[in-house]
Length: 368
Image (cartoon, rainbow, N blue to C red; front, side, top):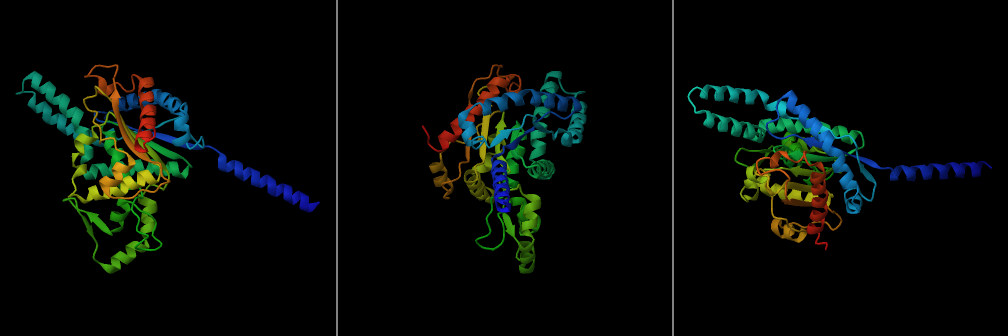
């Protein structure tokens, strides 16, 4: 009798464990703001806009059988109903106020039209330029990384959505934080690591001329390698946590036009990043309205074979990540208002994202 009871208990536990493995895993959507959003009012507007548009994006993605199969892993993942807003606009406010003081001085001698245009251009471009500076970007990335680590600790996956200049932050997060560097072939016991862990450990630094300078101190190298896994745990995104990135209204290609410069070592590093994206099922999707003057495609829409030839690297056959740009949808707004029209037309914007994911996946893997 005891044996029967024991077998029933074992069967009950096994069934519950199997059921637990099939439980849905939540996916947190983290939305990043763009330029010219630096005040309490602009933050409230941003949060309000995101809360309004997120249900449309969630519904559109989850209504697609293709997305359910590929992005949401046959329904094992689900998109959380409540979005997270990551607002970095306050970080640049002091610098923006200093710029405005300089503009005000010009108002005494400058024609009103010139002053108006100058003010408009400076406010549109200020944050995009501000966040490009390394010391500013590092602060923003550090704060964003806290959100990603918090999601990991809560058992969540993450999709980051970068609006306008916010797409610079999502791209830099991929470059700096994804554990795309494999050192285990050379050093046993070392886990895959990331750009920031390498530099924080002192194994190498990234110089102002775009070069990696490796440490030549053997004792320092040994100590750094011994502690590298801890640096990886602190500075890198946990493997499998970042599901993808959706950039929109993105001028990324305009500000990162050096991405194809073969003389920069960071360009060579990007090949490891692309391999990580593909082999670890991470997608990088950019969607822009066709009329958006600040929406730039980040690259030609290549397939997996094109990328292998381009960066001379071999992908695994199992991974299903991809990158794609969709900029062929007309905005209901005029040319002038297109950059600000995404949240005003949530159904069209959400459909754009869903179609972009499907088209991007099929294009990359040459699926009819």
